[in-house]
Amino acid sequence: MEDLITRIFDNLGLKTEGPMKFRFILQPIVSLIFAVKAGLRDSKSGEVPYFWGLIKGKGERKDLLKEGWKDVGKLFVIALLLDIIAQIIILKTVYPFEAVITAIILAFIPYIIFRGIVNRIISLFKKK
Figure 1 (cartoon, one colour):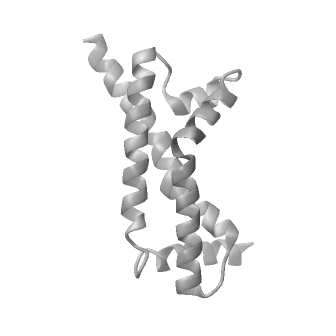
Figure 2 (cartoon, rainbow, N blue to C red):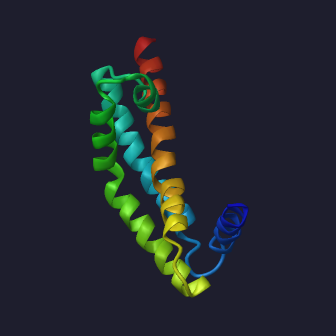
């Protein structure tokens, strides 16, 4: 297990340089754009911040996950494919678990973080 974790972090470091490094900037930016749109939509409808809704909203958790997947699903799939291509180019092999982790880090985590932040900021301005 320790070897797996070490390999994941080593390979993530390898992929920040070389032919596929642009995706470490581009994919979080695209995710940020989707998050801003969704955060504005949440603020207009009076929704709780996205991540908070995922944690606390028992009944609506499934709906929130569907909505989030609809927003960043294509980006996640593209991140996954680009990481597999990068692994083939750089490592000459494919580690699917690492590709999924990288796609989550580059696509879904920024979306979750920024969607809630945008919602809170817009809601604060609305109150004033």
